[in-house]
Length: 512
Image (cartoon, rainbow, N blue to C red; front, side, top):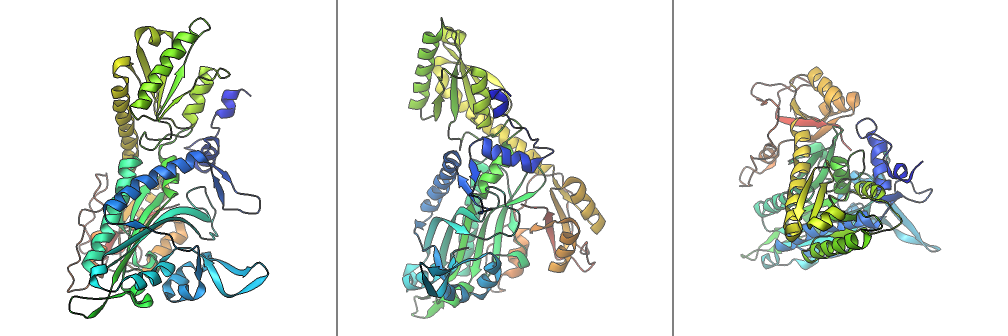
C-alpha cells in the first residue's frame, strides 16, 4: 500500500457515516480513543483543541461584550447541594459519577463529579447578591463535565467527559431574564452561522424534555448530512425555581425582598462534531477558513534545477501572507512529493492550497486551489493577500450554501401518523407535524422509529408558559428558514398520534 493510500479515507460518508466519521476524526489527527477500560473517553489532540480554542475565543468575546465575567467553580458538588434542587437530582442521577473515598478515608458525604453546575454556582450567587444594585449578575465558566452515558458514544458528539462553557445569570425580573435567554441563543446561532458555516433552526424543547428545573429550554438544532439532528446549544430560562431552592434573593428599591429570576446556557464541543460531519467528505476533513488552524498551505513544486528559485519565491509569498495575518503553513519538506502533500493537507482540512512551481515563480503568480471542490484561481503576486481573503469568503459561502441546501431540502410536513413515520423512515431530516402536547404521543413515535421531538416553535412555547400579567417578549420569527415545507395550519387540526386537538407544531427527527 502506498503512502497516499495510507492517508486516504476508506469509508463512505454516504453509506457508512459512523465508520467514516470515526476514520476522519482519527486520520485528521483530531482525537484518539481513551485508554482500555475507559470506554466513552477520548484524548483531544492539538488540532482539535485549537478548533475548540477558536470557538471559545469567538464566544468568549461576545460574552464579555455583553457583561459576562469568567469564573471557576469546583469540579465536585456535595450531594446535599444537588438534593436542594429535586429536579436536578432526578434528571441527572443515572449519569452522575460519585466520589465516595479519598485515599483510604471514606468521605462523610458523597461528592458528585459535576454533570452541570447549577447546584454549585447557585449558592454563591445567593452570597454575592444582596440588592437590586447587584443585578444583573452574569458569570461563565469554561470547563469539563462528566455524564456517565449508557448509550453508544461518539467522539465530540457524545462522550462521558466533554468540554463546554456554562453561563449563569440572575436578574430582577422575568422579562430581563428572558431577554438574557434570547441574547445567548442569538450568540449560539451566530457561532454556528458566522464561524462554523452551518445554518441552524432555533426553537424550544417540549415541556417534558426541558432542562431539569427550568421553566423554558431553548435550543439551536443543526441537521447532519445523514438526516439526524444535533442539539447545537441550549439556553434556559430557569424561572425562580433555583432561586427559591438556593435563596437567591435581593432587596428592591422599596426595601422589599424579592426572588431573583435566573438563567443558564451552554455550548459544548459537540459543535466540533457537527462541524466535522457537516462539511467533511470522502477525502477527509473540511474546515471553513474562519476556524481552520492553517488557512493556507503553500506547496512548492520544483525540479533540481528550479528548486532554489521556487523555494525562495514561495517563502517570500508565505512571509507576505503571514504579515497580512493569514495562518499559513509553508510545506517545504524534501522527503515528501507534492502529491503526498496535497493528500495530507486535504485530509487535515486546510481550506486553501497555494501551488507554486517554476511557472508561478517566473510569472510572479500563485495558483490557489479550494479544498472543498478543487476550484482554482490565479493570483498576481502583488495582490496575493487580498485575493486569498476573497477566496476565504468564497469558500465559506460554498460551505454554508451546501449545508443550507441540506437543511432546506430536509424540512417536511406530515398531517397523519403514517405520513410522519413514512417520511422519517424514507428521508430522515425534520418533519413538522401537529401535536397535542402530550409526551405519550412522542413516545409512541420514538418506540416505533427511534425519532423524537427535537423542538417546537419558540413563540408558541413562550406564549403558553408566561404569566398572564407578564410582558415576556416572544420571538415570532423563530424557525423561519426558507424551506420546501408546506405551511401547517393548526386550525381544527388534530394530533397525528392520538387525534386530540393539536396545540402546537412539533419537529420530529432522529438525533445524535
